[in-house]
Image (cartoon, rainbow, N blue to C red; front, side, top):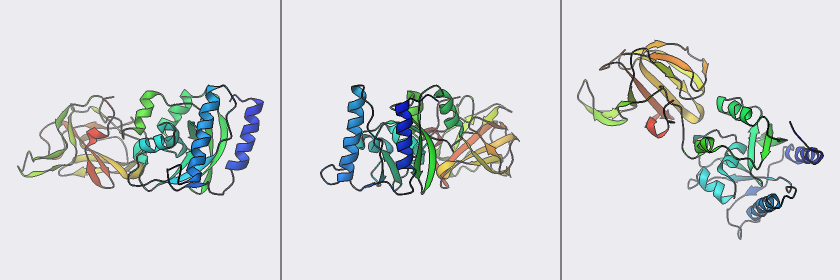
Length: 300
C-alpha cells in the first residue's frame, strides 16, 4: 500500500478521532440556515473540493450521522450532502441500492471517495478490491452500527460507471446465460386451470439441462420438489430478498449452503406443472413477489 509521510500523519490522526466509540455529530435537518451541523458538513466538503482543485492537502476528514426519512433516496441524499452516490453507499457498507431503506441512520463523510470495509468479503467487494489494488489508500477505523470497523479509504476515487449503476437501480445477476421471456410477471389466465391469477415470477425459455445461476450472493434456504413448482431452489439474499428457481431437472446445491453470484446451482427442466422445458424465476422482498425484470442485470 502506498503512503507518504503526510499520509501516515493523517492516518494517525484519523485513528485517533475515528476509533473512539463516541457517536458522530447528528445532522437533524438538511437546511444550512436551520442546522449548524449540516452547515459544517457542507463547508468541510466544499473545502475538500476547493483544495483538490488547487492541488492543496485535503482538510481533516470528519464523519457525521443522519437519519433518513421516507421521502429520501440514496441518489437524493448524495446530492444533498454534495457527495457522489458511491461515496455515500460504500461508507455505509451498501453494495446496491436495495441495501438502503428510509429510516436508516447513515454515516455521512466530509470528503468524497470510496470506503471499503475490510470485514466485507462478498463477490462484488473482492472484485472491487482487486480493481483498486494499485491505487493509494488510507487506513481508517470507522464507528458503524455501534462497533468499530477497519476500512480502506480511496480519497476522491469514484466507481467505474458500470458499477455505479448498482446504486441507481436495484440489481441481481441473470439466472440464465440468455433470457427470453415466455410468460411475464403479473396477472394472467393460468395455463392449466384457466383462472385469472397472479403469476408471481417470470418464465424464461430454457432447453433441458441448461445451466441455472444464482442471481446473487446468499444462502440456500430450501430445496425440494412441489406439485406446482416441480424441483425448486430458494436462496436467501441480503435485506429480505429471496430468489426462487422452479421446474428444475437437477439440483446442484443443498440447504444452508453458501452460494455466490453467478454460481451454477441447477440444471433447468420440465418438472411439476409445466407446459414444457423452461425456468420459472421469482424474486421476493420480505415475502412479497416483485417483478424480476425490474431488478435484473442484462443477460450474462
